[in-house]
Length: 184
Image (cartoon, rainbow, N blue to C red):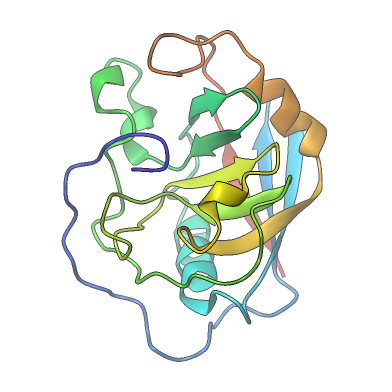
């Protein structure tokens, strides 16, 4: 995904409905890691298709066993690539997705600390499953990536993850697996 790495082009189909999200407005996500939990509040009025996509994937268990595969101190942590379930295929990290894409839903919400946004390739409509959490204000991303939520609890967990030792591709040397649960 471009935010943080290149990706092979995914099919350009938008398989999400054109209506408002089916996710309840009060739904939230809990991302569990060995360092603790990160709780997310969604923005269904701002990015309904992205919220619906994330909720649908999480409920299907898509994110469980994936890792935060890219960490850049002073910037963000990125996860949600199904290729990261296989620790022997590090060369494909950052290239996986769910087999569909979601059209961009850019907004005026700034990429401030704690924002949840979707990673994508060069095509603005290429987001699929990979997401990132901004750990420092990153206003250069504004109106270029789809913000669809924010961290309400556990930003310190993201701080721990972003500061882990990493390799030359910004992959943490330690596998930080996640389990994502939707709470309604």
